[in-house]
Amino acid sequence: MSTLIPVILCGGSGTRLWPLSREHYPKQFVALHAQRSLFQETLQRLKGLSDLGSPIIVSNEEHRFLVAEQLRQIKQQAAVIMLEPEGRNTAPALTLAALWAEEHQPESELMVMPSDHSVPHPEDFRALMPRARELARQGQIVTFGIVPDRPETGYGYIQAEGERLAAFVEKPSAERAAELLADGRYLWNSGMFVVTPAVWLKALAEHLPEMLKACREAYCDSKDDQTFLRPEKSAFLAGPSCSIDYAVMEKTDKGSVLPLDAGWSDVGSWDALMDLSELDANGNAISGDVLVRKASNNYLRSSGRLVAVVGVSDLLVVETPYAILVANQDCAQEIRELAGELRQQQRPEAANHRKVARPWGSYETVDQGERFQVKRITVHPGHALSKQMHHHRAEHWVVVRGTAKVTKGDEVFLLSENQSVYIPLGTVHRLENPGSIDLELIEVQSGPYLGEDDIVRFEDRYQRVK
Image (tube, rainbow, N blue to C red; front, side, top):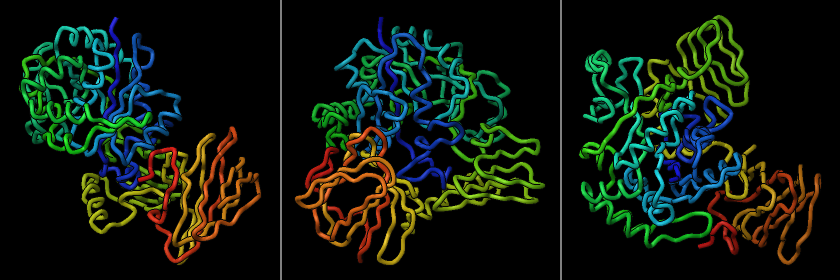
């Protein structure tokens, strides 16, 4: 029996969901409407199927530690985490995954899924897998067409003639969308596929050989550091940037489509997220610490502080530690432009949340001002920061939970709760967690420059020494 290998595509920035989704912490890694992130929900979607293999994750350098940490949280082992040198759309990402599978599990079928979609009824999705795999083994490239429930202008459409994929339709006008809905043969394009490695690579060789050449050369010259597989950059960038649809699906005669009615959403905007949310008696979607009086049809979300609304309707109110969004729901699609403006202004709110993931754990900025910064640092058991020093800042560490192993110059010693240490400017140091629970400490930095680039690394477990 062949193996079904999930291929999780982790590109995308989700800027229409700012301020929750940001450049360095995009929507697929955020718990938007459940306890798990969309990425974690995607990994869980196929659980329970027989012959299910470990997933292939295709991500990028910037998000590699988010991927590793979220895999750790749900105790999921990946077959491989591949890091694209640069985002080049979905076709090169699938090609890299297919090349790995061709080498390691050539008899498998690949279940290709974007990491930032929601499928509230995964049992209906799993029920289609036997037929999808059967078609894939017959040489078809299978996609899933979402059964539409409204004339949507934000999605592309697929024309289905039975199980045959007859045509693609670009995002339509409102009038055309209504016609497609009434026709009954058209489904929303989900961007999910089942295909064998050999069939995909053969189709790419026929329709876009220059992409296959570039990806194969990049894959053959990959660097493997036992945590991440890094295809060679210059070869990868020599190939075109192209989606799966444009590269192959719109040209092939081997396309099949299965209708899927499982509550699917690409969670592309705040109004889409509101559609997935439970509503109170007045039509409000509420998440977090929110107090409501005489308000209706609002999306109200707090990440920490109390949000109180009185006498308003049709608003989006999203509170995060670094930024607050207040918008009319009619303007939900314009939030992408707002996020773009923040990037142009090089505002940190466009890229980062206050809590930042690192391979060893995370840090969160608690307070900052001229010549000082206070962080809350969490180090997972068995992990360690790099051996490092700073040219412009001194640090004071106070342990609040767990045990810290500290290297300070030539000294190595342990600190327990309520103990502290001072690291003078220019001193080589390292922080480790030798215990079995998370190490939490407060770090107070002081000096004329406190940027993250003031780190000189001498040793690092996570290959960050250049």
